[in-house]
Image (cartoon, rainbow, N blue to C red; front, side, top):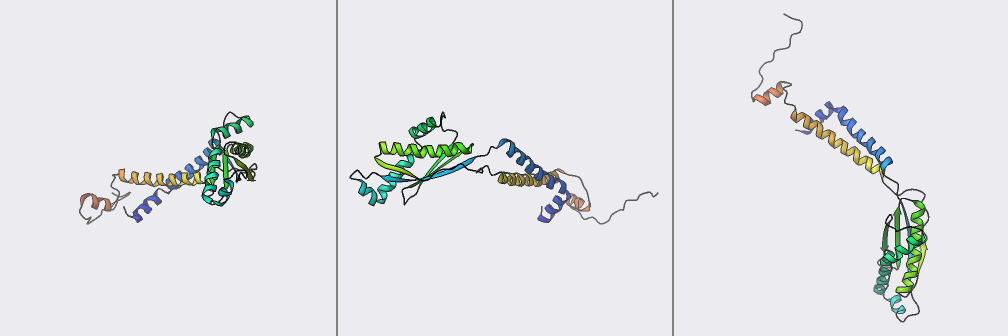
Length: 219
């Protein structure tokens, strides 16, 4: 089937080609509103300050590799069971399993970025700030770190970060369009009726040399 034949076929079934993608997009739009809950994301950044009371503090300050190792250790602490359990207890929660916690540490600095995603805007901000406060206390206790200072405190988001409903609607529209094209092509393949002289030539392999016009109302 050539492209021109496909376009002609789609034009013949234009109602289906238009209706099915639009219907899929509308169904996805309503489905995303009914079944997809809004999510909120907050971020807070922290700076790891090495203890100045130890002999190794000068080495940590001058050695970038050692500083990065210290930062990575603190980043790991943010997702440890102790820090998350202490934060959940302070907030009156059983655990933090309902929240998506992401930690990133820069490769050339002691800055750590903590991101928390959840269904409630106020809760995600409270969890992020709670984790930052608790990791500082644990780091001072077990790693002899002077402090983990919060640079940017997490604030309650005013708008959801997801889901991207427009993307889902666009994907549903394209899926509906693809399905409509597939249905039209399949209908044409399964239709074995002889409709015109060209179909006869293709079916019998012989040229049509004459046609008898249809007579209406004559004797």
